[in-house]
Length: 156
Image 1 (tube, helix red, strand yellow):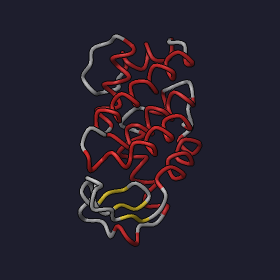
Image 2 (tube, one colour):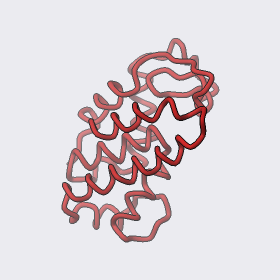
Image 3 (cartoon, helix red, strand yellow):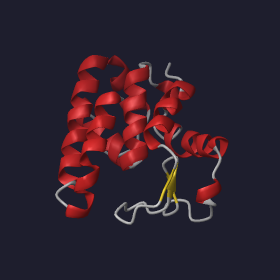
């Protein structure tokens, strides 16, 4: 089974520290945790432990990461969920698996996902991520993020 502690290391590496880029729709961000999504948090003083708790509860557990057998597959779905939303990441995975696309990774999705060739899944999933980011980059204000998004996808 996939391990949250291995996956979170990738997330924290990708997300980095505190940023407040006016072109970032998430606004004020620290370790990938946004003020927009967590308005009650003191983002600038967010600790690594707090970030890990949020990632475990709101992202990893939502995709049932512990039930995914392949670490790379779980980390890809988790990473895209962090960057683009859990429902979007889940829907993209379900499109590849040809299961009902509802944005919720439940028993049926996990069963099919765990029987799918992981290398093929990761290849297709990365293509879906790049396609999504390319669409986003049509907005001029987001274009500057495209290289980093694609690099993140390739490195995950």
